[in-house]
Image 1: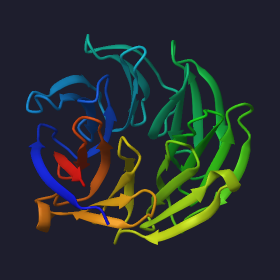
Image 2: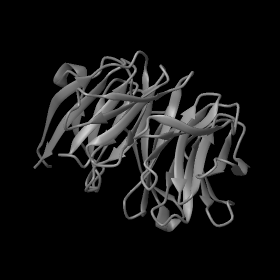
Image 3: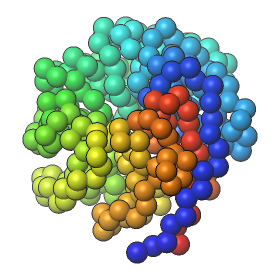
Image 4: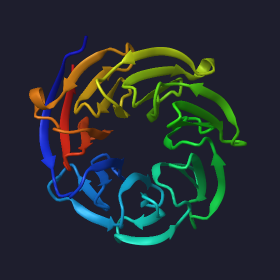
Length: 304
């Protein structure tokens, strides 16, 4: 079992409400945060105390997606569609009310934005003008999370009807419909080689699916006490972290699927309320966590 040391480097404050999402920026040290206060903040891990506001919208933000080739940020505005933000100019370029529902996750493939919505749809939008390309109804309950397979030929969508839908990006038909969890699926992550899909959600179980054998279930682990909100792989792919409504962050071996570290308030001055999002950066292997307590924590993760 590897030896792991965890050090809390800094707590970042400034947001006025619960934090729901984190997104990587142009370089390993840059990232964005957003939440219930509608503020989208830009941070630099080399000078983390100097966070700046990029934009502000009226309602909660559950989803951010960075477009590196444009240096723009897509913001999922609760009940007000998507907004395209120029990061350098700190200016909204355009917006589109693609839905009146909440947007829980945003991802993209090439020049197409994919939004997961609370009305059970995913919506495909053109990255240049935000026009709607297609709306795909996947169920009556919310589409909560999107993961893009590394080959870009299929995507996984986690649903509040407990299922995971695997869709072809060629014809947007459902290839596999996994009855995956006992409750809502909140987070999905593919391994870097695309052979595994990790899923977790309200039932507090972590599941590992083998995408090379029609998404057969490989592992099922009772990983947390309460809902698992997010999964984030380390940059080298050897480990991943989970975070939960139980206020903890857990570090796992990505090959053996064994727990190797628990980060919580008692042991590491962790968050006092639900941990909603993680971003494991390639900047000195630092892990960022966002919480209902309105703060961000920066963690130095050393694994020997």
